Amino acid sequence: MSMDEACYAQRRKRLLDQIEEGVILIPAATHCMRSNDTEYPFRQNSHFYYLCGFEEDHALLVLQRSKKGTKQILFVQKKDRTKELWTGKRLGVSAAKKRFRVDAVYGIDNVDKVLSKRLQGVAHLYIDLYGNEKFLQHIHQLCATLHADRSVKVSPQNFLHVNGLIEKMRLIKSDAEIVRIEQALHITKEAHEKAMHAAQKGMMEYELQALIEQVFKTRGAKSDAYTTIVAGGNNANTLHYIANDSILNAGDLVLIDAGCEYQMYASDITRTFPVSGIFSPAQRALYEMVLQVQLEVINAIRPGIKRSKLQELCEVKLCKGMIALGILKGSCKTVRKKGKHKKYFPHGVGHWMGIDVHDQAPYYDDQGKELRLESGMVLTVEPGIYIDKNDKNVPKKYRGIGIRIEDNILVTKTGYRNLSKDIAKSVAEIEALCVGVTPTG
Ligand code: GLY
Ligand code: MN
Ligand code: MN
Image (tube, rainbow, N blue to C red; front, top):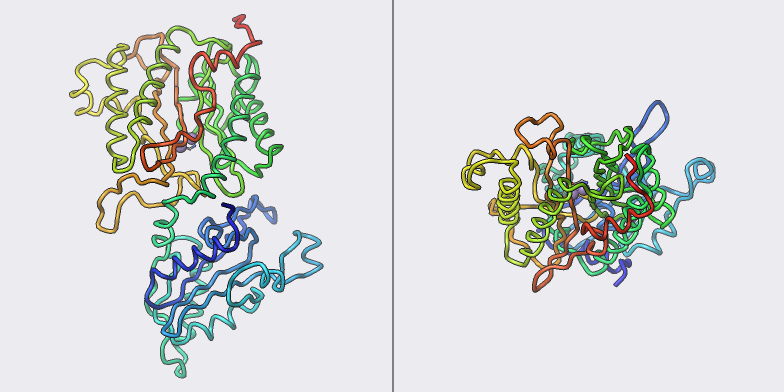
């Protein structure tokens, strides 16, 4: 069940099977500069990783189908003692030849020479047309040179966007991919629960962030899957709050949206809990309402249902909950018709998750029809309620409260499996974890 070389070879074959003729180019990610000559941490291009499981930079995968059959070529960095002294070990050409089940491996410094030959006689080129502009421009230049060469009879004229073909494949996860997501969630659980236990008034949000990320790294996750959100009190009402630089106040809730990336697979979990360890009655009423909605949406997951149905269910249940608590007035029907609930629940019910936290996989088919859930898909369910501290339309006791509860769900043949079900979520579980800290005001 591991993701071995046979698994990557199988994916490359499945990709090649989708085209009649042509060459597919998938480059590794390039480094992003932070400032001057300092780089952001390198993170591999998800599609490239999906197809070869290789984490190095300066690499290129070339897949070709012609009348003669298929050819798979990988370009990698050559071994270079001086460069490896500065930037780390490289696999090198000969080890890559042994490891990857491709037809040929070349040094990346030969890429232009080899590609100029290989692209002669090729009319269709499949490439990422929307990302990595530098690479695209380089390939355009190479093809323009071929086009201008009177001795070259056929050179690439049709540039096609390759991503859609890979994204469709990524939509359905294999058992081995699910295992990695579960491993990521195992670490993420420990991180969230440690934060619940440690939180207390007077701490800075970034201290909780540090605790969470310490768990990620010490448990073998090299990175977070996205920037950790630790939002105390009213900060939770900023959906993508990442400043994490406020003090945590007694009596407030704190919303933590954090998930590690484990061996290139994401987790995406939100929990909201009281800084002082005990929910106030108003916080508890709102929390239990959101939790109930989340459980009902998760329970509706099964093959055949559309994501838009889950969105509708989520909105209806949240509307009813908000009306019952006196946050919205009127009937659920009119509230929804006028979109009044969107002020308090402005985002989607969830998204695909996998190698990317917002996985690059389609929501509609080629005809624009919405996809129905299928066994093997992984999605988040993340209802929330966000009430600004200055919102005079809402009873005072609810102002300044932001709550989101997010889990990661696998669609199975008969329904679903909540992959993050073990992460403390009920009021009782959360309050039990927050023990040791008494609210002293
Ligand atoms: N953490 C990003 C999201 O929940 O979509
Ligand atoms: Mn999410
Ligand atoms: Mn999230």
